[in-house]
Image 1 (cartoon, one colour):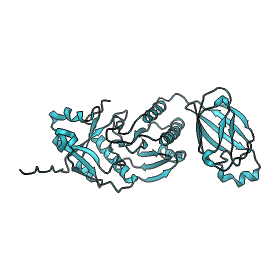
Image 2 (cartoon, rainbow over the protein chains, first blue to last red):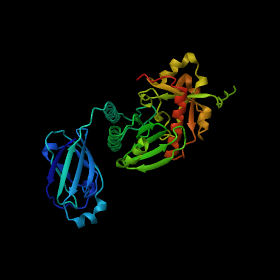
Image 3 (cartoon, rainbow over the protein chains, first blue to last red):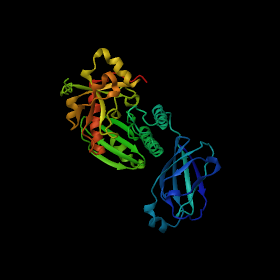
Image 4 (cartoon, rainbow over the protein chains, first blue to last red):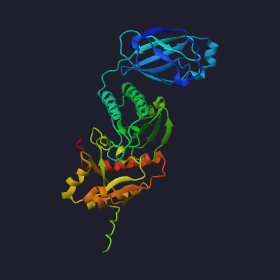
Length: 235
Length: 134
């Protein structure tokens, strides 16, 4: 069982509607770079994940506003965020400021993953890509944008979760492509999945049977939407 | 003086593709990055029959540290692509051995990746000719 910490988030002033710069903060106990990509009011029953010193933590939250307002705004309360914060055994106090949330109760559970050599080497591999300059393959390949690397890390976290929670025995190859995208190339039995990450998009392609040439599915999704693709591969 | 007759690529000919270290998985197999068609309308390759075995070391020195994979021309053409000779002066003595895979410029990413994957599978079926050294 993970350690679970519960904290109240203080009422916050209403902010101008500006999803791009939604202010979000940590107390000094867990301060660090925090990038919110969520829409205003994402906390209702959210099961969100953040990176805690590159380790996974699970954050769930409930918005403490009127029920009617809950229901009325339900469609807004979905999203995700990622963060890098300093690892600490102390409870963290999370503060959200949005247009809608005036008070929230947040539960933070620290789930420190078992040692997974592949996960660590994959993280190292992505970090290595950050240092590759143009023409890194001697054929004019593009360097990797920060947004691409951030998205790839988000996908890697989903992949790591699947590896931990399913019986899947294989691991994906992480392939840098010459156009600046990063591919997770993953075969399992008679299936294969490509997740090609570029900026904030992921192109998902499925093959089954393995020796087929034409893909049986192709779609463009966000990094936080790869679960169904991964479930298909593991199923 | 008559111009040299350009090399014809037959269905049974092999083409070689340089392999950056990132194109080979930890288990030694080639990944789809080796044949990615996303970046350029032409993919640089070499014509195996124009590289004498005794010159292979010198040829590999064109891209120090990189390895080599091979696929057959008919495997390329079966995907709707083509391979044609394309002299590359930067390759020096091996200029005439340079070729390009073409035909994908207007393709969707989906189709480009299908082809890259199929070429990866073909290369793995033949086995890596020479693994990267760094």
